[in-house]
Length: 186
Image (cartoon, rainbow, N blue to C red; front, side, top):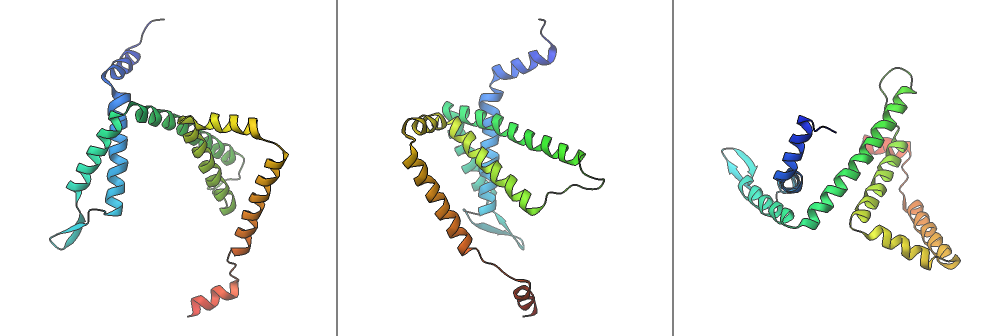
């Protein structure tokens, strides 16, 4: 098989460390910097009449933490594995939305609130499973369940789940339309 120009370029970028150093560094720096900017941990300073975050402090802390991330090959491998598997999850959701859009009548397609919440819960569960798989815990959990799973354990887990669901259902606040109108009138 002959090598293409683009394939050679990607191999060259891989040798430079683009996928193992540069991209994980940029990802870590961007996420940490955004969190520091949003939370304003280092405070704000007044420039003219405007309060702005201390971008120099936020950038330096994000820079140092991103270097620590890149220094650990295990963390970089974890980032690479989770990012690729999370992309597959996003890709599956996009394919589902395309399929759902094809089957709908003309107009803009929007998920109802219940379905949207269900997809968010499924996405959260799948992301947790992706992280557990990436750090090697998912196989250990599965082996533990296979080894120690019996009828008493199953019934105990089901009972705990039912108790939690019942407590959530009981404590859920219900507002009626009359209560909503009274609140708006005040």
